[in-house]
Length: 197
Picture 1 (cartoon, rainbow, N blue to C red):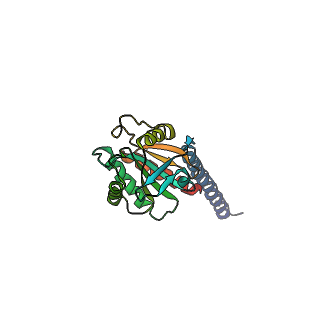
Picture 2 (picture 1 turned 120 degrees about the vertical axis):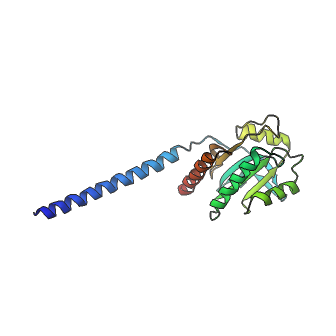
Picture 3 (picture 1 turned 90 degrees about the vertical axis):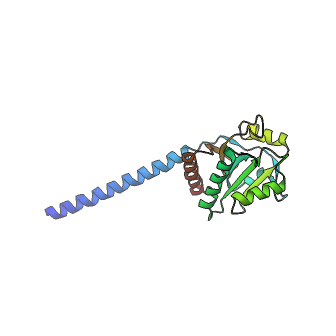
């Protein structure tokens, strides 16, 4: 066998081995991201109302990846930032029919259906973002017992975290809704869940 043939064979096997290593590395990175999305808890039964008057329950979470937040429309601090960030995610995933967004008001006495509709028009550009309201007792219970988030001294005392929920109603992860790096992380985790099918 000539030296040229030996070199070609060595080069071929080198490329082959590097390809296998590359695939293994990609697979490990994917598994790492999936493992970084633990199953925290399943969302309990609830019933709220969207600004269009339609009922929204835990069943509306089925077969959809959901990003949830607690906000109120008169908020001048975190809520506009959180809602802007959710709006950016909505635009980035505009072509996906597997993703939806919910924002639950912590000030249902002020945030009427009309007020929430106006808020929706300001931040949302698609009909996959629901702005929900219910009695303050239901909101407190859902926040504390359903999402394991603070709900003291509402409306101001709501959590500023965004919540990622999978297609089986499981909370997978929390993200600080006002931090850009967390929004990038959330975006990447949404992609991971979409790829999981």
